[in-house]
Length: 326
Image 1 (cartoon, helix red, strand yellow):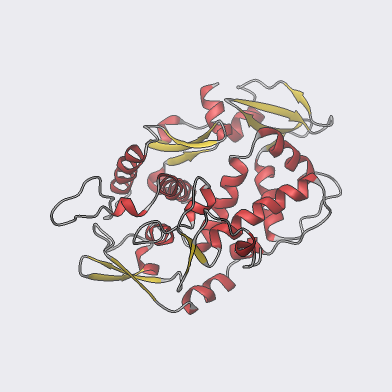
Image 2 (cartoon, one colour):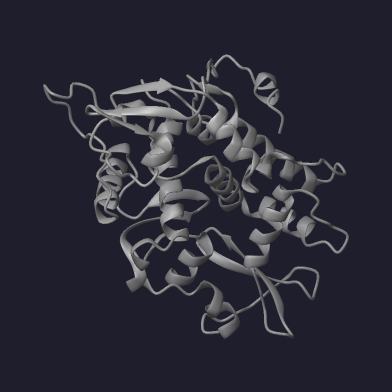
């Protein structure tokens, strides 16, 4: 999506401030750490005290050379329902990556992820946890697909899997790969698996998406979605009923505590304040709304799972959760 999209979305609840360069210098307790180095959380201690913007150039070179950055290069096709859904996803990417921070994000998840409601913008915390612009785009698309209502998700899957469909943009290819993972086959059967509430539904691709039965012990199904819960972290996030949730509570206080535990478990030296003190009268956790903090936590857990940190899973798809609980 072009950078003009945000201007079209201008509303009374979405006040904005111009980014002076996403790449920043973070001053942490008398230690200056450039955000590119902070991605591994090295030398990061307790509180982000100040943010000093620097040139855009370092970030722009990184984006230009990244395949993930091209997720914004979407080519609109026919005005079908499937195309409309793809355009919606494309537009959400534009909200998250727009040049303006949002000061009053309201209850929109994507606006909160690109917000600045305190002294420090959310993007700085994403950088601190190793989530650069390319990963943000990837995980935002996955979040949009994972939390999409079932019938809408099915409509998009049918569009993407149509014999006439040809993925012509990186975004479309990413979505195509997403649904390929949710498709299981054994040479005879060809089935799309989609979560619906707390159960998985099986659509027969050889019979015009007619629902079919599949046993939990079916190798075709089990080999794709079985998760050994012994390999899942004691603290993990998941998609349940089309929402991101944590296994140990979902208030902001709950999430802060769980994030701190995860950071400790993964060897990070950073943490989020749960209280104030004379030395630290302001909590760094107050720089983010509940939705924004949840977004940062979700993207961090997706990254930990993707990189197999500690040889554990930290995030579960809805289909994996449903398999485990069925």
